[in-house]
Image 1 (cartoon, rainbow, N blue to C red):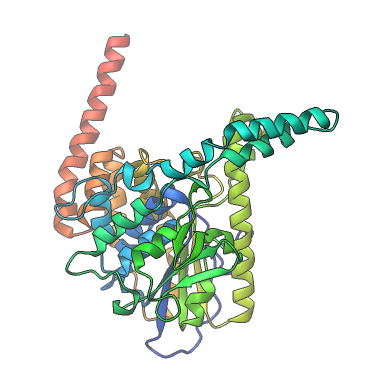
Image 2 (image 1 turned 90 degrees about the vertical axis):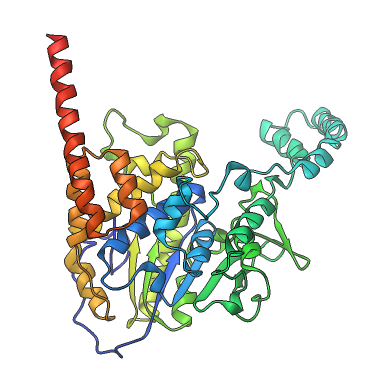
Length: 432
């Protein structure tokens, strides 16, 4: 899990920061969450849950500024409204007494009207394509045919208005708001204006009149997969096409500490066993790596420029490590794997935070933020003693790192370890 202060992908990403700069005791801090589909959103929830364990007398809800793009827009909209990472985990596991869990049809609502409208053009498109081929058959390639036939595809397979309604339902609770100007925190949600290619920033002032739920849907409208979201006569698509994470918005809003979580990072496939090249895994692996390279390189360049322009701002980047193959091979829009991904992120980020504890402690101390790894170490020990049993891990993530909860889990972890040993002995006895 590369987490560095001097650019992404350096030979020594955990280099200790420069001597502390004298700053006011209290200034703004920001959390920036990048895009990454369903997998990205749940990765961020798991990573944030891991961060919570190390913060002393504060949580990830206590950042002053939240900036979200695509998947990150969904998570930041809830964090800015005070929803905790434990509540989000309970919702993912359909285990929250009040918070409605996100369902498949909240994400994948068919765009039937547009699809039917386009299919009516199929006979004419086939006739036109065939006629063009007959007149240019020597130069007309398969790529030309596919391009011509693409005219009958809808502007999106799914309709993002279902996601808008889900977020609206969540923010309709008494302790939440669906308006940027009513939030105590500063929230920015980033989308891309389709007709101009410009970055669109929803927040206080400017586009702040737009409901948060609609801004989240606009920021998450992945082209082809979702039809563009129309807001006041303008069409918007996924914000990642103007940068997977807009850290500059947080800095311009006054943040001197920016923590960014990026779920999409390329892997180093040369270290994988029984495989010489990533292309051997097929088109899915190639597309996945290409997308990660594209978005990651843009983020890397963005952070490099910001560090040069704002040397007094600390930027912490948390993302999957080059050997995180489990995260890489998860489908970006996989709903069924949501719990697996969140739990994986929690474990990997918890380990990464502990391994690089001196780095984080030094950087965050400059901003008056204290860390302690006692709870995280206790949880890692419990997970190890349970042989990383999913039930134990899920209990830790949903209930929070209270001493009572941890103490209660130790007997369960020991029991799971003992059961594992007994089953192993039984298997050996049967084999003998």
